[in-house]
Length: 155
Image (cartoon, rainbow, N blue to C red; front, side, top):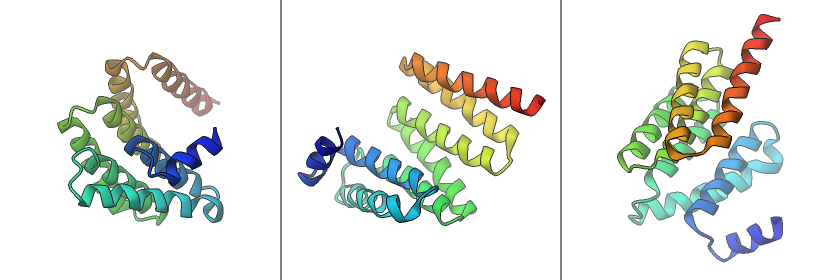
C-alpha cells in the first residue's frame, strides 16, 4: 500500500490522495516532526498550488491544512481562524464529510488545549456530519471515544 501511494504521489496523484497525505503528515509531525513534517508540507504545497490555479475543490482542503500547519507552529489564533474557515467553506460546497473532518480536527485541537465544552461541541458537530454522510463506523468510533473520555474524567 505504501509503495502504491508513493507511486501515485510521484505521478501527481489526485486531490484526495494528496490532501490525506498532507493531513496525515502534519498530524504525525506533532509527534515526530523530523520524520513527517516534510511529507506533510510537501503535499500541502501541492494542494495550495492547485488552489491558486483555480481548482474549486481545493480551497476548503487548503484551509484545513493551514489550520494544521498553524497548530504545528503553536499558533493558536491562526489555527482557530483556519479551522473555523475550513468548516464554513466545506459546508458551502456541500462537502459534508470534509466539514465533519474539519470539525473533528478542530475538536481535537480544542480538547488538547483544555477547552472541553467547545471541543465536545465540535465533536458532536463532527458526529452529526458523519452520520448525515452515512459513515456509521466513524460515528460509532467517535461516540466510543467520547464515552472513554467521560470514564477517564470520572476516575
